[in-house]
Image 1 (cartoon, rainbow, N blue to C red):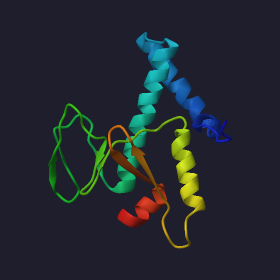
Image 2 (cartoon, helix red, strand yellow; image 1 turned 90 degrees about the vertical axis):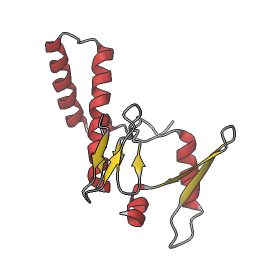
Image 3 (cartoon, rainbow, N blue to C red; image 1 turned 180 degrees about the horizontal axis):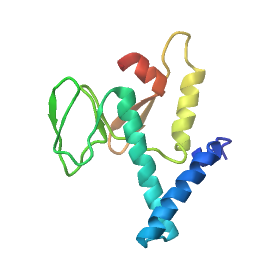
Length: 148
């Protein structure tokens, strides 16, 4: 069991305001079941997370667009059936904001931080045996120090 607090526990005032706002909105629309309210709230949080990410990486939120124009003037064509969340000149981001990060990712990052020599960036490398894929995981501040 993790000692980490959820977003709702860390920011109860924001959570309550958001919960009341969304609940009232859905009640007026006539679709006020608890599951529907929870789903709308999760989409609302995800959309806000995409805009926060776009501001941080100086990118563009794609949405359902077939093409986006970056700040540099470069146009990028997007597959509208499976668009990424945010694009930049160099990266295409798919953002997932989970209630809790999976335990194995947290454990591997903790080990990378413990074994990390002074002045180097800790990066966790995880592989998928069945699909022969490798994933590199680093902290946000290290990513921004390198790329932005």
